[in-house]
Image (spheres, rainbow, N blue to C red):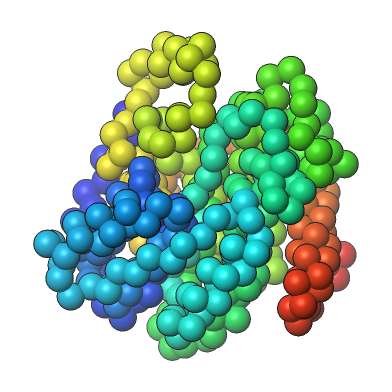
Amino acid sequence: MPSQQFNTLKAIPDLSGKVILITGGTSGVGAETVKQLAVHNPSKIFFTGRNTKAANTLIESTKLPNPHVQVRFVPCDLSDLSSVRQASNRIAAKATRIDLFFCNAGVMALPPGLSKDGYEQQFATNHLGHALLIDLLMPVLQDTASLPGSDVRIIITSSQAATMGLTPKGGINFRALRSEQKMFGGRWLRYGQSKLANILYAKALQKQYPCITTVSIHPGIGYTGLQGNLKLFDRFIMWITTIGKRSSVEQLSWNGLWAATAPKGVAKGQVQGGEYYEPVGIKPRAIDYQTNTALEDELWDWTQEELEAWELKAGLKVRHSFSSSS
């Protein structure tokens, strides 16, 4: 169970005029986040995913509690950078502002494999796809942040796995990110590596774009669509080791909702940019990799180089990216 309760009806303020983007919104925590936010009168909610049927069902479910909110589905496969680009174009064409950006989509413990663009598939989906989507939509995010009274936030879903030693030696094996990274315990090490990248990238984004509050969060432990790829033995181990710790899907949405809407500040219960939070709003003691600025800088530079190379190849105008050394 989460360490504290979170009353979404009381804790989340009125969101009138706000535009929200949620990746991976067709099921699990993403779908629950869409439902919870729709009640609070945002102007628009965009959500991405790959299942059009599930998306249509979700849209219909939001009309009963709030028939006035505009909920729009944008197809997107985050493991495919071309798909990410297409999704960003659709969103930018319909959204003049983005106030809350939930980088929620993810995969877990996949077998060895490469993405369409040649990256280890968990890293491609959980980190690089989101990094590109953030990059392509950054002009909209910055424009929104410049508006009077705005409070733009990016909430990146990470995992406690990144803080439990479930990573390759060094935290992130940059040399092997264009390989399947086959190794003992590889499913979980590759997953933890991508989730560590989420934590570090949130820190880097906060430094590069201080006008936007960026945090990473662990939603908690529970059963969502992520477990579909697990082997029977892994499912059994997960079931045994999480007895008494599991949360409902509704509860799993709380930490992200808190991070998106709680007051900003450094006091307990407030949201501070660049930090990592566990449910609900708890800032745990950081492990070495989380505070390794050299690793953070290397991830930032590697990501910018990969995105610039892809954008150049795709015929996009390459944006001026910041360097960790600048």
